[in-house]
Image (cartoon, rainbow, N blue to C red; front, side, top):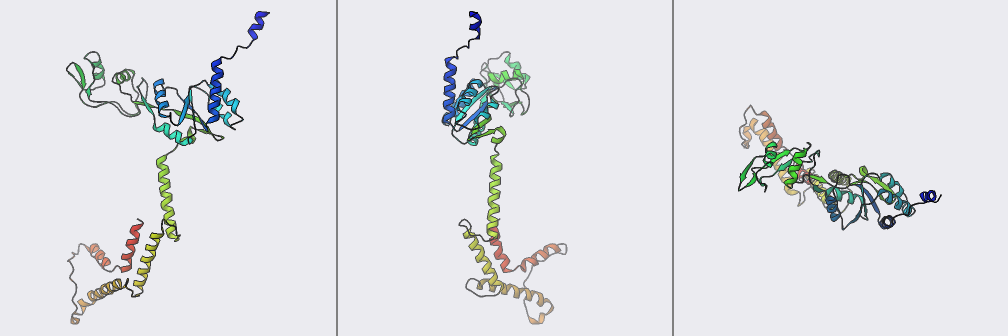
Length: 338
């Protein structure tokens, strides 16, 4: 009977588990952002490096999923909606506690991946190159590895020297196990790894991987396009804002000058344009009348000879001579807005 009762007694909870739950509850309470990141395939040295990069902005902690679930249950009343994080507590995880913006965290993790050695079966993220130079290896069986991947070598002062930079695996190809071993011996780390946030809690909301994806270049392009459209609209309706008032005044002044010239209103600003326009029109009349009425004694301005084979060019030159002064003024304004 005594033995039967003993079997049904609960085992005491280890002290380290109680302390770990307490620590997790403290971190959950103090931080606005709680993220769960997948660490499958990431070695301890890479985690250490990522932790070092994040040390000034976040606390990283590896713990058991069951203990995190217990900690979340204990503080759920303080952070509404946080219990939904438990759905993502599967596999190997690291927990990130921070107060920075969740999108800033996601971008930082994306931009601060760390390198690791290749493993057989990895997919090359980029072309993998064995660089030219002294490998430090003595001649021996390793020569066959270089020959296998067509890496040109020579023996120099008792060492294997790679003659030129050589691509041994192209982007997207599978890295063979024996090549991965060679790259490791050469201290080439071609694989970038980083923490991938599975989900995070922020002010009552759960954001997943897809929610955190940001195309910064596209956002910049969208903002630039929106700004240009706003400028065009403001100019089109003459909406006065401090950023555009100088351009609007130039536009108004230019149009006023063009209107005054077209209506032949002489002012100190328009008289030069009016006279130039009158002279151009007078010359056009002379050139039109003089050939058929030589008795008037008009002198026709000489033109460069234009062959019969170039009628289009002759027409373009005539059109240029007949352009009005106000059109010339408008060109200056048009150039301001591209």
